[in-house]
Length: 156
Image (cartoon, rainbow, N blue to C red; front, side, top):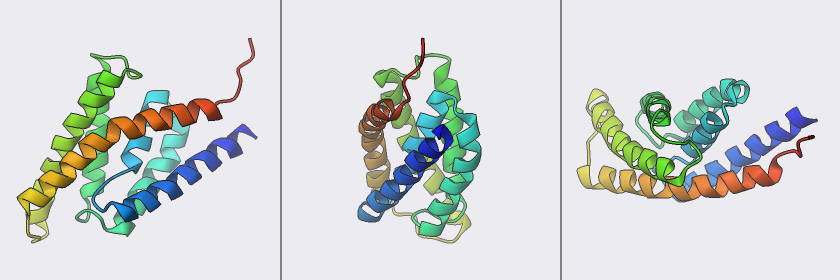
C-alpha cells in the first residue's frame, strides 16, 4: 500500500508540474521534485522518476533537445557538492542551490542553442533562469510540507 501511495503522490506531482509548466513556459517544476528525491535519498523512486521526468520535459519541448539531460545532471552534481557544505533540509542550502541552478540554466541554454542552430536570446534566457532560481526555494518549501503531510506515521 505504501508503494501505491508514493507512486500516486509522484504521479499527481508530475501532473501538477506539467500544468504549471504549461502556464509558465521555461520553468522546470520537475527539478524541484528531483531535489526532493535527492534530499530523501529515495533512490528507488529516482530510478523510475528521473527517466520519466526527462521524457516529459523532452516531449513538452520547453528546452533545446538534449538540454534536459545536461540540466538534470547539473542539478544532481550541484546538489551532491552542496551537500558536503550544508544540511540538505536547510532553506539556505536550497536558496544557494537554486541560485547556482539558475546560473546552470543559463549556461546549459547557452551551450545547447548553437549546437542546434537556434538563436540564443540573452534577455529571454536570463529572465527564464532568474524565474527558475526564484521559483525553486518556494516550491521546495511547499513540496516538503506536502511530503510531511503524506508521510506515513512511524512506529516507535
